[in-house]
Length: 110
Image (tube, rainbow, N blue to C red):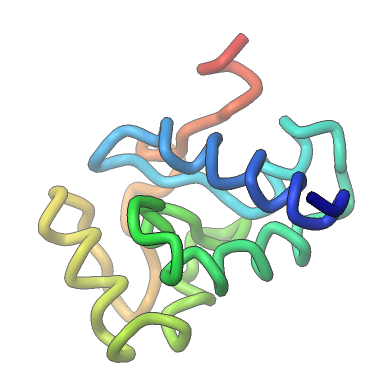
């Protein structure tokens, strides 16, 4: 397994811990994994997560709560539909009440 594959696996392990109805950001995951500044790599991992199957990639958004990865889902509305099914309100591709719903891996997994 390459270092790249290992990082992606670590990302998937963290994402699987995000509770339903909560969201986190690419940067928060990167920081938790000791790779601050690697938010884009977390995004690449999320783009490939659909092939894995059991990674709730819809719970990972950008640092201000925008569904920036929505075009990597089966349809452009799928990410929002999955979040709304968990009780997360989304308007104009933005998670509403983002601060309250934000899941901080560094705090939650300490």
